[in-house]
Image (cartoon, rainbow, N blue to C red):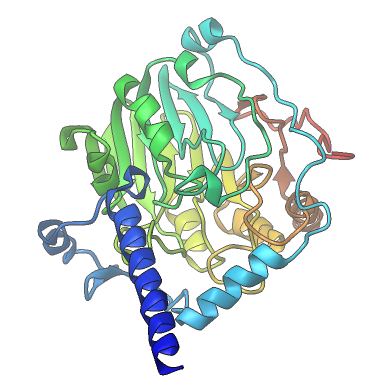
Length: 376
């Protein structure tokens, strides 16, 4: 009997060892995980008010660090809970774009939504991508996540015009995607990121000369535009051992005639009012609205908070984003847009809700697509 128990234990420990080795090999060598911030870069980040003890921190001490058991409980709850109307009944319809017309565009500042938090911004004759994520799954491997709600795009990546700049808000998979970066890097002049996120881009073959990392409240002139890296209340990390090693942010994008705010991912916090006071009013604020839950209230806003944050940043109008892309939380997929519209009406705040691919003129307050999500 003792021999049998001993044999079972040997087999069990061997399996655990093999799984551990496989996991470490996967996370260290599979390219989607990106890079690890070097000691040299960490030394440079010591000047940042957000960087302490080798990690980046929010102004408020959130999110709470979860224990292993809490992490497993959270994962089990997410994957075992059935959500009524958690996904659209069919692929979302999109407005298709003509590649030649897009490449030749020199008109007023405009945006095209690609779903979730991804945009093409055409401004002052420049082409910018904001948090471009064009893969099917927001995960390190296709088997580790659910597919996105729109299988087709307004314009395929290969038909995008030359990109002058790409702006990233943080390094989570639904915002920074290995496959997408590989497909756009040769047609992109420059990349702008919060501190540390450039490490992943360098790991994916992009020259450091093409990457500019900024801290909160730092700004830079790019051609005729001013780009400002502004605060957010969130977190970072692409694998279990590098959480908080890179910074997260929102962005202000200004030209002589237009002023845009992009919230990135964020919980509701005083930084919105600070940004509004310093850089507002904004012609348009692209505001996170989706993938929220009572289990993580500090790092994603509820829709009612999204509307209030729009008021705080002094937006003339807001567009809810971070919804209609992926199922990353346990709410009805249309819940974000319905609730934010109700609260915005109460606050007398204009909201636009374009379909994916619809052209959005920054200074135009007309909402052409009314409740397009109904019955889907």
